[in-house]
Length: 135
Image (tube, rainbow, N blue to C red):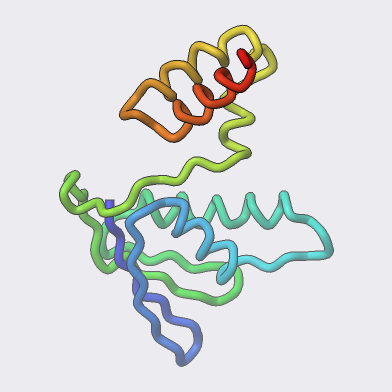
């Protein structure tokens, strides 16, 4: 999806366009929320609330934040695959969550599958290590 916002703060006007929810969330966290002491959970909850409200709003709707911003959903459209020029990056934190606590039972199978696809560098590294082990 692509969403275009018109943001009015007092006498300032700004337009922003987002193709990913995560980018909208980061923007909301940095622009529409205030960190009080070290309450990062509260900051993230506030940002998520605003981002979800914006993401789920219809074109033409207005949203007012506690900090005085007026956000208009200027345009919203569904993107097809050819419009999407990004690939979501996988982070180390995401992998740790995905692995779970019993990963040692199945991780070798996954690594074998990954290493054997497209003559990967991982495959070469594993083969080289195995050859060294055999010597």
